[in-house]
Image (cartoon, rainbow, N blue to C red; front, side, top):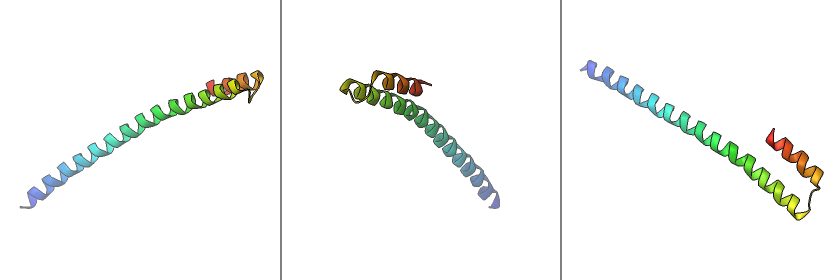
Length: 69
């Protein structure tokens, strides 16, 4: 009877390990996706501000260079 309890613990451990690995990869992929998205959103906002005349061409080029670095 005690042998069955030990076997169940091993399976539970593997299950928990699998779940942990799944969430680690999911978090890493989301972070990669949203990291690129934030940069492109900032560039779009910069383009809009330049188009509206809120910033000069020099400011636009300087800030664009900062975003691309």
